[in-house]
Length: 304
Image (tube, rainbow, N blue to C red; front, side, top):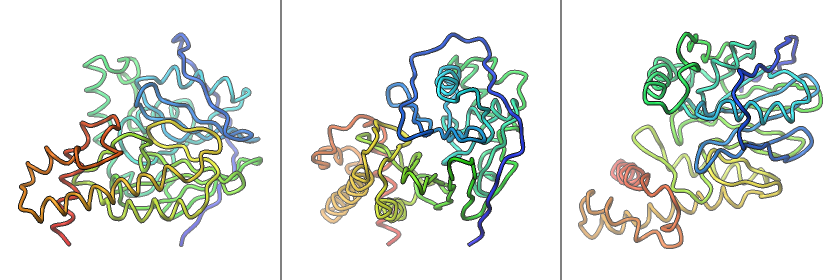
């Protein structure tokens, strides 16, 4: 396994572009470790404030200013030095170029780097044109700065002085390029979109739900004290319960789809009827994700 350990020698400062502060707040998870709950079902941002600067894991551009203000409140004047992401989706990576413009270094794995461009430019441009994000965050900006300038294959450790931050590439699950962050001293896990808490997750033909389950069980086996999901609620000390619940969600869906398939139901019938078969999970929000996830599970059953 190839590993890298990185210290700091940069001087990068948080810049705020004049937008009024929003309502987003950083929840303290441990000394110097925070999570920002995205509004509604939006993406969550994770932060580590170390002696040598700030590490940011994912940031949605639709609330860029609000997230930056929340970071500023807990950063104690320290700069954002590094930014990384759990995968290449725009709600995770859409602030990379803005932080890099201010001097932060973007870190990622080679699979992530291959997938990120030109996808991100197209998506940000589309969102700006439709008013979902501010045009000033895209127009005239060098979106290519979102690309990682430091690549790691398996694992990379950032030394923030007061904190060690381990980035790990875990492989194909939600998408092909999933990565997580582990803080070994604090036993805190930033799970990104490997974890949707009490929300139907998104899976499609980019996914591998069986490997996703294996990863979830592996991460739960680390006995994390606190887990920050990509989407959904979190709190200090929430532990591994939500990881195991997501594993059980996929196991339930797979068993129900197999049973429906074995009785001769078509894929369309399964996609329309699977929600009613999910028991306790049926009431979760994000029901729009169910048909796509069901189709991917059905596809994987056929592959077996």
